Length: 263
Image 1 (tube, rainbow, N blue to C red):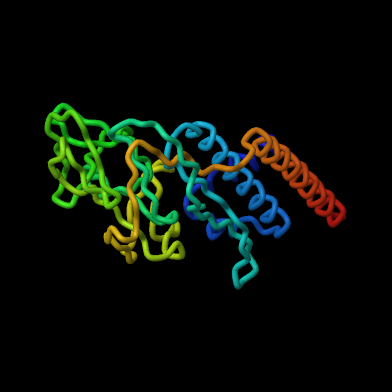
Image 2 (cartoon, helix red, strand yellow):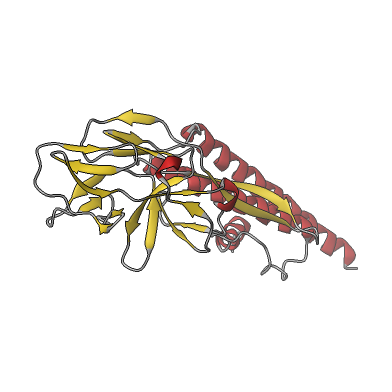
C-alpha cells in the first residue's frame, strides 16, 4: 500500500473527542509518532473548518480549538476546547427570536427525547400544538413550568428576565441557565451534539437566577467563528502535505538505515 495512504488511514483512526495516542504502542519510531500526531492535528483543524463553513449561518454555533500538550511520559497529545466568546448580535425583529446576554456562559434549555440540551440558538417557532420549539430540530423550549404553550395572540412581548406576555397576559418564563465559570465548560463536562446544542456529561454548577442574564426579543447571537475560513483551510492542507513529506523522508531514512545495518 502506498505510504501516503497508509499514514492517512492510520491518522483517520484517531479523529474524535479523545486525542491521546495510547493505542499506538506498535509504532516504535518516535519521529513517526510525532508525524502521525501532527497529521491528526491538521485533520482535526480541517474538519473543524468544514463545520465552520457549513454552519456559517447558524446562530449560536461555537468555535472549537485544539492545542498540543505533552504528558508526563513525554507523549504529545491533542486536547480540544470550546471558544465560548459571544458571537455578533443581529436584529431580526421576529417575535420568536431571542438573544441571551450572559457573558458567554448562558444557554436556553430544550427538551430532547432522552435528556435536556443547552443552546444559544434563539430561533424559536410554534409547532402544531402552539408549543414553543427550537427552529433547528423542533425541540420543546422549556420554561419555568415545563414546556411553553402560547395562545393565539396579537402581540407577544418578553421581559429582560424572560417572562413571556401574550396580549399583556403573563404566560411563562423562558428557562435559561448560566454556568458559574467558563473553566467548568470543558469537553469533559459538556458534549457538543452539532456545535450549537450541548448536553451535560458531568454535573457542573450553574444558576437560573434572572439577575445573571438578560433576554432580548427580536435579536439573535450569530456564530462566533472569527477564523478566515478559506485561508485556514489552505494552511491546514499545506501543513498536512508538508507533514506527509516529512513522514516519507523519515520512512525512507529508516529503510536506508535498515539496509546499511544488514551486511
